Image (cartoon, rainbow, N blue to C red; front, side, top):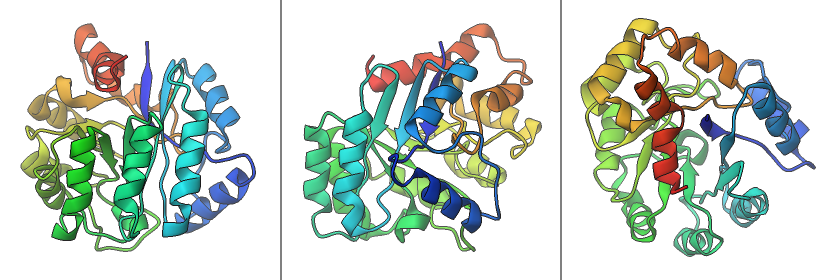
Length: 263
């Protein structure tokens, strides 16, 4: 079994524009599926992925409801678990978190760079507290983002501080932070949060991947791709090069994710 804990797709009416905008913003990064739900499912089939977690992001106040309505509409809890999002600057963000929970959605995605907040800003505590009260999983983009200039808003030291304020499962995406190997090892490894292992292939040196796994432990690691920007076959090339046992690989590939999603 293989569960991909970090994917994206967009509604049919906007996916082409959304993908092109993201490509333009990030320097024409290559995409491996077209950004639609059907494209994601085709990629899953081609790459032997059984379940995908779709991470939606509300990048402004007005998107909240439509983003979460879309998340709910594709959240079949069979092969697709779709997470919602809130825009932290929205006056009704806490109410929207309640609505996310009422829709049966298991978690939320927050992207500090796209959403314009520092992950360790104390002003985020009410949102983190509500996420904790509702028992929602929260996935943060972590580390660099190629669509934005520095300074980045979710670096490892700040991520560790923010995670200490949250009492429900926290996931720092991209091995704890894109291009942040040394600080991930220093500030995040061993802390009470998960890493998803998305966007590691050709981005994360093998030696650092091994060190992160050894120091953080396989029980807090989740397979991920960042589809459409990478796919499962690419990410498995990196994982399969690390000499992990079958049991450890299975924890990363699906056992840890099943426990988090309660499936």
